[in-house]
Image (cartoon, rainbow, N blue to C red; front, side):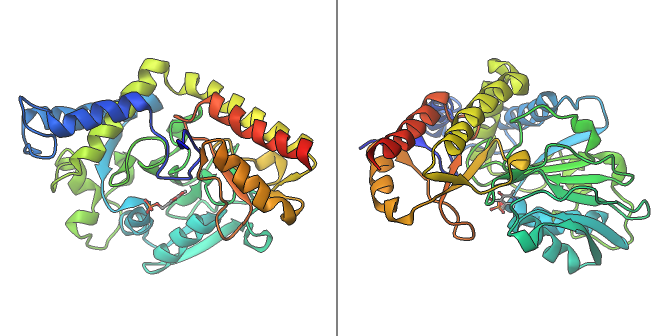
Length: 354
Ligand code: PLP
């Protein structure tokens, strides 16, 4: 059975046209040379990097507003410490909304004082805390826009009195936001952009250079900015593929166009979860994620039958994360409405069988 509907949480589905083009570049990118063989300092690759950086700012509506885009390595997990190294002088506030926020807090604590302005840890992160305060003497405020594991998503962002840093790894480029509210955004490529191996960092330059510590060069945003995101050898394949995906999104009509699709996919899956008595949503309704729908079976005895049915229908990657259990349908930008319809069909078929 072909696994044609890929609901994996990441690495995940990418547009087929992008995969086609990036695989061709492995064989021949520049007059017979592979993308993997050429110098990253050669003009064809420098052009790719510049295009990728420009497209990221363009899609987010941040051109000419004092931001720089970088494509770095080490994943979002390295950003957990890099953010603190570059911005944390005395104290920062973190909103703890899931495993990834928790890990970001743990790393930042190595360097200085962290205060959790709000947390939903005691409810196993099935909601987003509201009504928290961000003190105006903090160095920055950090939040996670979409909680990949628990299926919750921040619908509103605070008017932060201090620089706002956001981990957008699992919902970057998926919905319209006023991105100029954020001073630093980071997002691993492997959900909505490309293969694992690069991370997009978009940073407002004027928040940098304010801490007293010495920052190792590879960890210093200013160093990467001064070198045009080429301080060391960049992950060429990941950057090229990310550039192609961003171009694909731009051609589609940008974030505005994909947001409509994403809203439709979310409406289809959540209405099935709510109407079908065999299933129960995990996240509280008002905080449900448009990217990752988490749900469980009301009757665990149906698990074997349901698992066999969705696999038979060509569905891949539906198992939930071990800390939630059940199922997780990840519906990143490149997943089609038809794939969501295929899943919903299996869910309603189970109801008619049970
Ligand atoms: N932040 C979020 C929201 C994630 O979903 C993930 C991974 O799934 C990470 C951080 C960690 O990313 P990486 O594996 O690139 O370090």
